[in-house]
Amino acid sequence: MTEKDLAQRTSLRFNDLWSYDSAPESSDNVQLMDRYDLFIDGTFQPPENGKYFKSINPATEEVLSEVADAGNADVDKAVKAARKAYNGTWSRIPAKERGKYIYRISRMIQERAREFAILESMDSGKPIRESRDIDIPQVVAHFFYYAGWADKLDYAFPGVKPKPVGVAGQIIPWNFPLLMAAWKIAPALATGNTVVIKSAESTPLSLYKLAELLRDAELPPGVVNIISGAGNTGAEIVQHPDIDKIAFTGSTEVGKLIQKSVAGTDKKYTLELGGKAANIVFEDAPVDQAVEGIVNGIFFNQGHVCCAGSRLLVHEAISEELVRKLKMRMETLIVGDPLDKNTDIGAINSRPQLEKIQRYLAESVEEGQEIYQTKCTLPEKGYWCCPTLVDNVSQSHRVVQEEVFGPVLTIQTFRTPAEAVSLANNTPYGLSGGIWTDKGSKIFKVGKDIRAGVIWSNTFNKFDPTSPFGGYKESGVGREGGLHGLLPYLELSK
Ligand code: NAI
Ligand code: MG
Image 1 (tube, rainbow, N blue to C red):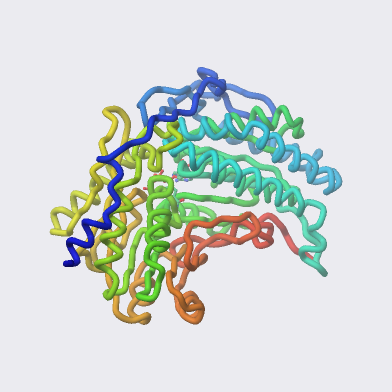
Image 2 (image 1 turned 60 degrees about the horizontal axis):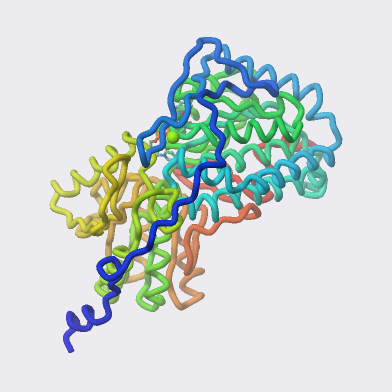
């Protein structure tokens, strides 16, 4: 039997033989207001400038609600409320009490998990399977984990006296709205700081749901202030003189602007920026398992993941087999309605993001690279991109160098571990990486040589609140998660 015959006989044929019945999650129990004001000092307040903008569902292009567009007067109000709460209650109440509030927030999110998951999928386009099984459980776990640290800070840093820094200004992106909020709010509160947090333009709604929950949890007013707005609102937070610490997750471009803006001030800052991770498959790797890991690495959350495994580096000896199996597996991925429980790949978060992805692909076509897209049928409305492979690329191509932030995987081959490491490190980023091999020694050697914050071996995209996360080089500074994640929110003095 030739290799081709064998391939045909062992092909997985799904879509043309049978398909799943649709299993949509109902959005009936998601109560949305037509309009959300800013959550400042424990109440919802209209913006001073009277301006609002709309948030849409990227899978249907329907307007879900409109939210306040905070200007500098609103940012100032929010910072003042946070300062008042910091001086008045939050930095003074016993640490154990702080912990109780955070435990309560965690439990209440868990109770309302379904509503949060559905809303997150509606506002961002991510599949319900992911928001239900990953985002929201991780949100709960983060609050729960940091609640535990609140009254144990003296043990975490023995011999020094940990003190809160004051008011934290936090700016988050649209790919994991509520999860990024949890990563930032939970450690800030556990360490006795108060917060002004801004959601991203396209995904403000789950944070306003969180605001309602914080009010129900009777968190003292002003401890967490939640606002919405675009880049200029973010810049107002960064520049506000009474903010002590900036926590930012988003693009490297904006990260650099923030770094310039805080230079010369005594503001502390952490930046979690972009990535261009190599997912390296050695010739001794379990191929089927690696295929699953590659799919998870790049197609999870439509590839809108800073630590996505967006560059496949595969040993030349197994590349043909691996790519063939990868294509077969990709054909089984269901692209479509994010609220359908069968969906693997939801909607691209926004029109500008879709256009950005399409520009990269158009350039790849122009440059003669080989593009493979699955035969998925796309809904008429909304923003969609089929799972895509880009082969026949070289290291200098933009699609290999830059963060596409979509379901697009480039493929390169290598012959030796040293070559794999040099390809993996040939990037301005350094956030994550993946290694697939049967040999522990190879994992340790190659893992040590790759300059990235997180290296997964024989798995990918695994998260846990106890584990620090963050980048090297242009992927940012500072760590979030774990014990390390407390540090940016503390002054440690003898
Ligand atoms: P962005 O970096 O502009 O947005 C992230 C957050 O920063 C949003 O809340 C935004 O309002 C805020 N922001 C924008 N300009 C600001 C400024 N001058 N000062 C303070 N805050 C500011 O990212 P964008 O434009 O939404 O996406 C562009 C690209 O960035 C994506 O295609 C992707 O490659 C990358 N990105 C990476 C993320 C990551 O987690 N690594 C997350 C989001 C985007
Ligand atoms: Mg939206």
